Image 1 (cartoon, rainbow, N blue to C red):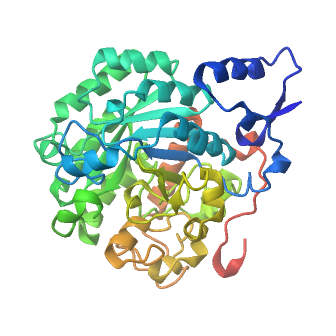
Image 2 (image 1 turned 90 degrees about the horizontal axis):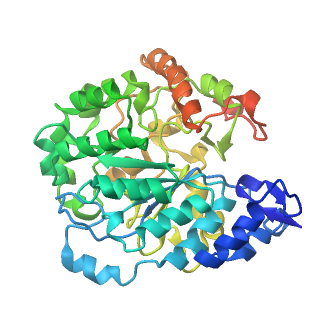
Length: 442
């Protein structure tokens, strides 16, 4: 008998050396896992490998113990939260409609977020389930509930495989304004994680409020060997009330944010504009991609590599586009079927459809422009990214920052390989064609 395992591989239940099948039967009894999902042959799912996504970002609750003024989930509005909590997905729905289908989409990591994810009574059960499904897990927290004891429990239920992600927008008082918390608390949690051997990552939400402090924050993170990414302030949830005043523009990006981002490979996880040579990524990745979205490793705009889901089960292409750009709901269709049939995902994973400067840019595929910024500024998620400061005439226009980006990207590959999110072409088969280049030639 053949059983389906992550990324399309199979294993046999008859081989004594492989005790996974027996383990799954045992865990099925304990956690109520629907064992039938693991008895499906790939031929029963012709779409199984058509789309490959790396990460599920799941805002599992809107409940929160802080009141950030620009909260994109609207968790700072208690009345609205109380109404929506009744519609939260249950553990069983999350298991059957998200996690199990996600395996068939090639997902390797689940990022648990909120609100404050740890306010869910079944938070530890969900983490345990994630690991038992052979998925990596990250916990994005505001740190208020992350005591040393809670971190030890997370370490225990995830077998030490969890990564803790903290939001920290500044090292000074600017963090309290935007995050409703002192940066000292986030720093303490990061130090505790280092002592416990848990993975660490920082998300910096950027806007006009931290233009002056951003470089200092990045320098601290890099000095402590922590990975990070920038996330834009957007007009989602309560962010819509301050987006016009506090959202960054192309001048802020060029002068304050981009120099620090391109200088440090620790932050090459995802940002735009990303001036990576298409030829270099082709060589490094072996042509691995999701439709036209470059992967191995994913770079530039991550819309097309993410699967974002809110607490009520709505799915979008990016965490910051949840609630405003909806591909469907997992209560109506399991995640894999929803993604396969979605016109939104068909669009977002095909960067040949990009418009304006993004559509004529040398970095059309290795950057893609921020789809969220395009949507919130123009209403067109495939449109021009107005926050980008690069003005190409056509695909022959090379950015002055390409050489620096290429150099640091090579350094990032070493970090990505150690983290398991990059494999050189010689380490894995390449079954996908190269990314399109100028005039459709490879």
